[in-house]
Length: 234
Image (cartoon, rainbow, N blue to C red; front, side):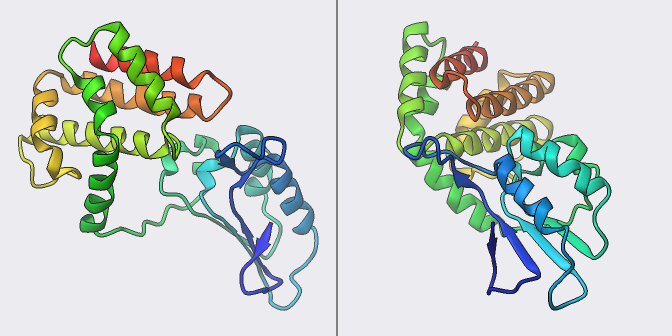
């Protein structure tokens, strides 16, 4: 629980590593942070007329933390403003989203494309394994194991998958490449979109999201990726 510019009425919550597993690269907003916040909100603002709470990467709240925050969002203390910041608001529980007003801060498409282009280059080997024509189970299994062990975590990989399948959906419906998030992968997108119905593409987008949420928990990451790879490649 931190503060910006030491202002006593501005509270900032950010994801942190689990102190019980300090070697883990995973960060999250845990229930202890939300409990500390709720305790802090029992006091009136120190200097101004309002307390502002900024929760960065709000989608990184674990389920227990989100549930603990829900009651306070339903009945916020007088003079408290909550700002939940997220680049992936769809990963927030529906109960949280329904109690928030959505405000978009668009990012220039050029910046998005540059970032995704870098991720595409870094994860190209895993994508080739995933989208190879009729890959063997052995190849899929080895690809999943390599992806699970790759330095830097799996967050960029899932961002890449979501973007690729977004582009497949766009290309499938329009046949145009101007709006693609990954123009460098337009050939791959066109090829894979031609093999899939729109219904299948949207079903796979849901599957990618479910797998991402699963690997953020305590499941076996290699096994979860193995199942995802098999289903996407079939």
